[in-house]
Image 1: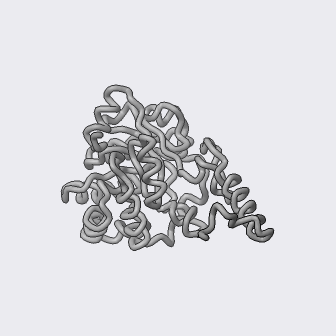
Image 2 (image 1 turned 120 degrees about the vertical axis):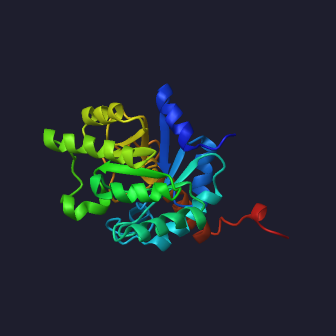
Image 3 (image 1 turned 45 degrees about the vertical axis):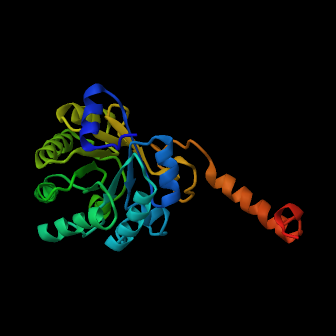
Length: 266
């Protein structure tokens, strides 16, 4: 079983083979998704929303990300593990960005890192790549800039914004990024970006023309009740199943039905 690499991903794009990516934040889920055959596991800063209970991703720290990324890496045999660089871990200076990116590889066992933004982070991406660390870009809706964007709405809706996004994509490719996440942009624009760059594009709420797709796993499994994006198809209802199982357990303990003889030692 060959590990997924950046060259394999580029080859998949050239062959028209779709790339699959999901988020993971712990060893158990990572091992299950890896066994299922997922290509990339993104340890997203969405851990702040779905695991740590924050309203957005901004409070997530490097220590949070290193902790969760290391757990994911321990559960993986084939999938590529990418660590999401949290807010203010790469914006202050190039040296700090390189140092923090390096921690994902040295301490957590990731293969590469993801940065949000276009032209503003191109030099940062270049510096990290030159240090030997693969970088995944992220354009469109960038949750770390949520206060600047003013919400979680559709991005690049007019022609000028669309042209800027295509320009940003080309700039990130020139900076050495091995792939791009395109979040919540019109599908027609996502197709234009995908055709404009030679590196794989991975969409989330960006339609079917991207080279691959990514979803937040708790959204995909129906586990996160707080909010479900329109673009997140639910392939299971594990939240309801877990609630039902816990309710049954509580009832059986209260009524002394559990543990029975088969669960006890005489």
